[in-house]
Length: 150
Image (cartoon, rainbow, N blue to C red):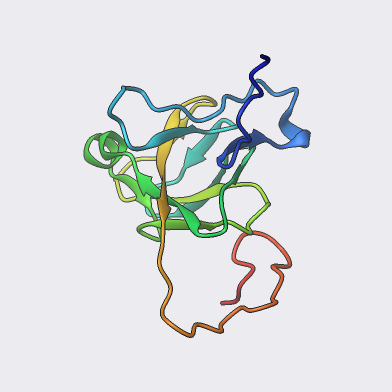
């Protein structure tokens, strides 16, 4: 009997425009890590006291009742005062564009992010909705980063 591979329901994909740029898929670094570490897809300077959008070259896919929550890496926050400008990022199941991180450098010096540096971590989670929820029924996301409004 030939065993068929299980259908993949959640994971990461390298965007077509980044296929030849040596991008790594996010990985958990230990057996008990909850978070998948994301790397920067580019060299970029995080100017002190400014928000800079860092590209990953990746998109995520998941089941309709799941979300990918993005968190700062504690080592960047503690050692270099680099955090996510929005606190926690939310990647919805219907978001199909590039995952990017608005990082803010709270330090007193510019900080150089080298391509491949781990910059944030993502955790997949199930979520609940309230009884009778009708918001978004039939709606289709148009656009990418910040596409659901202000």
